[in-house]
Length: 266
Image (tube, rainbow, N blue to C red; front, side, top):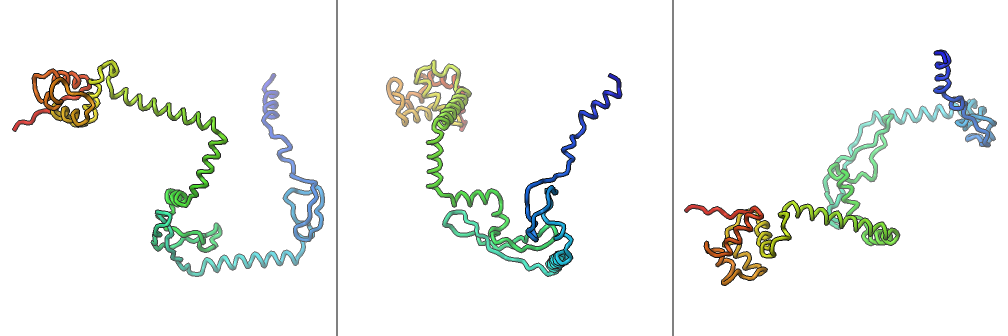
């Protein structure tokens, strides 16, 4: 295939179809909007008035006067002084609470042609309370709680299987997030240690500031979770330097990386 045939084929391939450029005509019956006489067929789709009405001098004069009056009114509205309209903001933070009460100048509506259409009667809020957040707040405090509850129950009844599946998926994702957080905080061999180690480790990890041995013993006594180590209470045995409970606490501190409080020299 030579170059000319290829160019011709491409032109035929990408050339617009003739139907796209055909005149839009219709054969549907329709009456004239002015004289109510049937329009000729076929005719253009946009044709709404018969030729006799379009060429009627009386009608054309009426249209010209109407247009001139509209232009005069627009010109007068542009030249006349604009009187500011002051209103009081009606926004409420609570359903039956006091209104905002701020006085503001209402914004006037100006057309594209410059005609002043005045102030909209629903413009009752100051610029501060015309934001999306303020509008959402007003909708929320004025909501119908009973109707919303009925709609929610009806939706749950219609889509019970899907709702329960979403709830199970959300609960599973929450458990996974909590497990990931705990796994990042706890040692890997957490559940291999005795219960006494885990209770003391939780107590040490619950405080951001370092704790001394006597403070740990006092909290263990106040919580009454673990039985006293040997004879006496936890505070007494942890205050000693040679008791086996002190060695146990030292091992737990190293396990969870929670050192004790550094003594302050007096």
